[in-house]
Picture 1: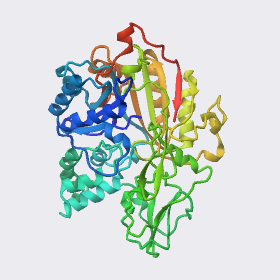
Picture 2: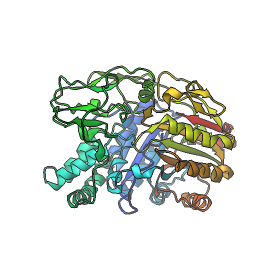
Picture 3: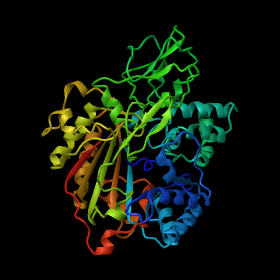
Picture 4: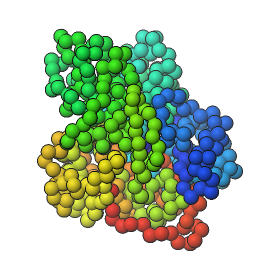
Length: 493
């Protein structure tokens, strides 16, 4: 998952936005004790995390608003030697400076190549600067627009509006200090009309098809207060004209569960019902904190996340990741992982577009592999296809929408140009937006990697990225060799 890798902004306003993530991997301490110690050390350096509804994973995430704080934190982590793999999201040049001052050398970097595809669907950049600080797309563009309007009307201060938005980020990586600095400009844009609400066509309507599964509206309880409308990331909650109530458009809804989990409805009219096939795919592929699904990467953990909701977990798949590869040593020099996230930052995608992207990648000779998490029903991908050799999906799922589907490809560095060119070609053929990432070993500097990618593709990676700072024990350094990484895998989830 690359949830902190696509934070939008300018070189100036990204300079006060850093996320430090920890992951136990081969630790000599108890993992829980190591994370608690990480949290304790980090709290001494002034993190700006927002208190709110959070997942257990949020204990391993800390957010900072200055390079000096991150540098001090890394120095203390070096001394503590907790056996944790540490990744820092932020402008790569500033993160490299932090590493060098702490006596560390960056090990892996996950670079963002931005959003491709039908980018006309994206909200204004001023709104994206705030919404992308929640990597799972839980903060709706319309909610940010609404909060900015309340700042403009002096109903909320910028800090109050930022905290209200940040509470929706379950992974607790939202930077409310940065958001508060961005809010006045956004509020001025709302007042002047230069920043418009996202998806205005989803406002009042005469009727939508009845939705009786998944996240639904109990019409008997709905009073038409409209409090829930701006919370939907995909503008699926609509006002029913002349009825004094709202409904959820089943075509737009991705079953993320945000409106239900926030408990925004004063009468409890938003309810979570069971899903039926093929709509169950929306629940499987989208927000892993939805009320009727499992949560990945938290094996053996159960916890409530909303009114009556319990989520459970299963072990994560094994694939090279910047979060722990300094321990596992799977990614070798000269290898890259290309990650394509259809539907992100928050717009969702259909399986028709997933099929188009999969078919665009097939001629490259990459194996379609493994199974799709997150779900506790780990169905092999080919069970969704009628012809896996041609990546032809079942006809009854092609128009199903989901929050995201993620492709991961382990490739040789020399294969990078043709893989990215294939993605550039298909980007103009789909209705969805997708985010592109490249994971690479750092042999010299991150800037040298970004320069090579820009020269090869004409696409300059974003200034902010995820950097594994090299604090973990690297198998390739200890033994002189590392376990060989699997070749030509395409992992889809």
